[in-house]
Each structure stands twice: as structure tokens, then as C-alpha cells.
Image 1 (cartoon, rainbow, N blue to C red):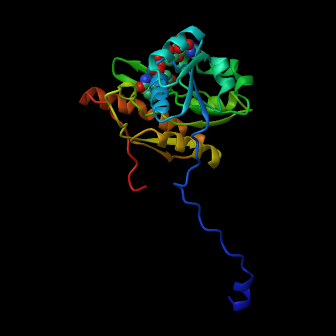
Image 2: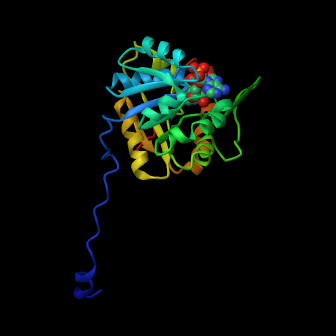
Image 3: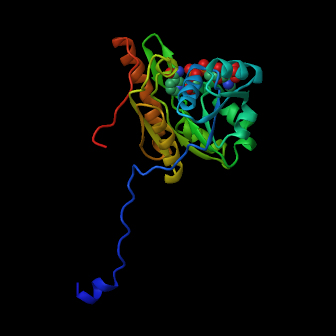
Length: 237
Ligand SMILES: NC(=O)c1ccc[n+]([C@@H]2O[C@H](COP(=O)([O-])OP(=O)(O)OC[C@H]3O[C@@H](n4cnc5c(N)ncnc54)[C@H](OP(=O)(O)O)[C@@H]3O)[C@@H](O)[C@H]2O)c1
């Protein structure tokens, strides 16, 4: 290379710091199926961190009752109103109701960042095992059903028991965050990072969501053997 070649080579932009995450404190977070342990637990932790949170239900009165139990400014509404009023919508319904719920809320979820935390699992006498959704994963089913939404996946490996326990000050775990757009993934990482003890780590595109969803079957085995509420840490990042 001559000195004139190097003079013409444009300077490479410095790599973006992967931990430089956006300020998400002003976003409204909705939780579909927010009356269940996972949804209530996430709502409680995010609200404790100062996030505005609405929990959704198929019945508005159930959501309002659950929201009143949680306190910290959490509101309750039916799933459709929750989706409409939120910037980020966490899907925390059982796998059995996943497709139907999302299909029925397609319009309300248009333009929203939808964060799927659903683990398609079966249970038999040997314990929990991963189901294989036709689309590849729950998250990919969400993306297929919601072409007008931005879909990400996260919060699969949390213990709802720990999330809901007011005696637990910090949730000692990483959260694997998957998605197609870096900006959306970083919003979800930043939300996870608002919860004391928790860290959101990018873990790939939605085509790799199946392994992340399935890993919960292994964590359930861990929990049963060791009578624990196991979390996960990704080391060296
Ligand atoms: N529990 C955990 O520790 C944990 C951890 C990580 C991820 N997850 C995932 O989070 C999701 C929710 O878990 P969960 O334990 O909170 O579940 P859940 O209690 O069984 O369900 C959550 C809520 O979803 C609504 N629901 C129930 N059946 C429904 C259906 N057929 N269609 C639409 N909505 C329905 C109910 O609310 P309304 O009756 O008020 O509508 C219920 O309170 C699951 O997909 C699970 O894989 C759970």
C-alpha cells in the first residue's frame, strides 16, 4: 500500500460500545397475561425500578385486582388496552394461548416492540421437555403472526418465585435477549438492566430462540434436583 492509498482510505468508525444502552426510563411497558406469576413478577420488578407498567388480562377486572396487589403505580387493563397504551409489550401468556392471543391483538400491537418470554414446554413423568413449534420457536411464531410489530425475545430463564418475592432485593441472573434489530435488542437489554442484579446480554437472532426457550426444561431439572430457583450467567462478557 502506498502512502497515497492510505490517504484515500476512509477512517473506520470506532466500534460501538455494546454496553452503551439507550435510556428507556420513559417507556410504558405492558404485560399480556400479566396476572400470572411471570407477568406479575416482571411487572413488580420493572415498577420497582421506576418503569410505568400496565398488566393485561383477558378480563380487565382481574388485571386491576392484580395491579392493586402489586402497587408501585402498576395499572391493570384488558390485554387489548394494555397493548394499545404500551410502547413495549411483554408476552407472558401460556404457550397454549400464545398464537390465538397474538393473532387477536395484531392491530393493537402494530408498531410496538413485542418481547416474547414464552417457553413452549411439555411435561410428563420424566419431567419437562421442549416442544418444537411449527415456526421454530414461540418468538418466531410471534414474528410470523405480527408482521407490523418488532419482535424480540427475552426473560425466559427467570424464576417467577424470586421475581415476586419482596424479600429478594436483587435478581442474580443474566437475561438472553434475541432479535433482528440492534436498536430493539438494546431497548430490551436496557429494560432488563433496570432490574437490580439483572443484565441483558445479546444472544442472537430469532432463528436461535428455540434453544433459549428450550433451556428452561434443563433449568426445571436443575431446580427439582437442587430445590433451587436457578438463573444463568454468561461469563467473560
Ligand atoms: N413462571 C415462570 O417462572 C416463567 C419464567 C419464564 C418464562 N415464563 C413463561 O411466561 C409465560 C407465563 O407464565 P406463567 O407461569 O405466569 O403462566 P400462567 O400463570 O399459566 O398464565 C399467565 C396468564 O395468562 C393468562 N392465560 C391463561 N391461559 C390463557 C390462554 N389460553 N390464552 C390467553 N391467556 C391465558 C391468564 O391471565 P388471565 O386469565 O387474567 O387472562 C394467566 O394469569 C409462559 O409462557 C411461561 O413459559 C414463565
